[in-house]
Length: 94
Image: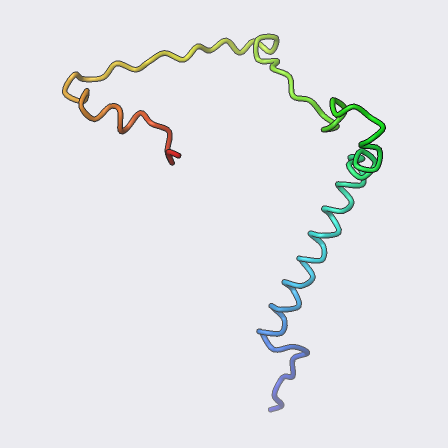
């Protein structure tokens, strides 16, 4: 019975796969930056007002979309009043 020969060891295969995925990630990031025009914005930064950067804006459309929610303070058992400041803080607190 002949022993099967592999092109790469497992370690070499994982190393090459990691290098390839890193290269694809960098190439994808560069393509995304090129498509959004960030390079052009930096090149013309002295000529354009800063209000043109970033290339997109976020708008609150929740009311137009029919999402009407109002947050109210939760009232729990009065026995929990002494620990409410601790559990009501955002986690992780800064």
